[in-house]
Image 1 (cartoon, helix red, strand yellow):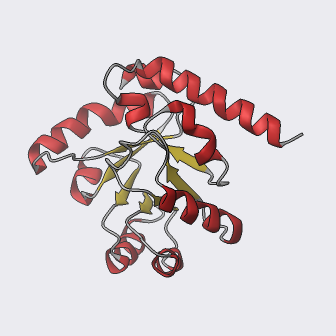
Image 2 (cartoon, rainbow, N blue to C red; image 1 turned 180 degrees about the vertical axis):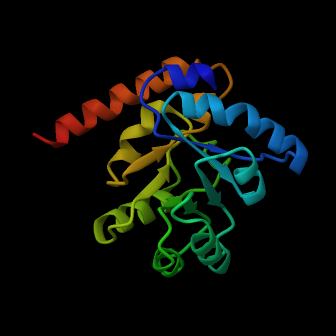
Length: 192
């Protein structure tokens, strides 16, 4: 994690339980949250509001696509914590989630970036959302940095990277640096 955070601009890190039990996940998050925050990024815990509070995370991300749980989290936690969500498979579900006023909506599923390219459904939803909704969105990028432009072209405010930064035989610092360079070049090109 330190290497990735040292590689360049990182706005947020989503800390996913990835199969850990509650105690192991909390211990994992307790180590990561201070590192992330010291680097100037927001530390967001995925799917565990108690752990988010205990480890003093900056926010909570709900990944299950549950509109009611999202509404409850927004009511209970905002503005003290950032609240975001994912798991919405249709435009209708995404709009219902947006009506609950989370801080952001993410298109893509954790662990679904095995392919080089971002998932076509995530790209389509992010592109549609960014065009008509003011609430920020994040799109999960593909598993290879060479495909970042496909995610950037959606107009999403943020692009989440997982395997492209933390995959096997990847230097996280170099990957974050390369991602920042690719984004800078893309945005410079489209602003002309």
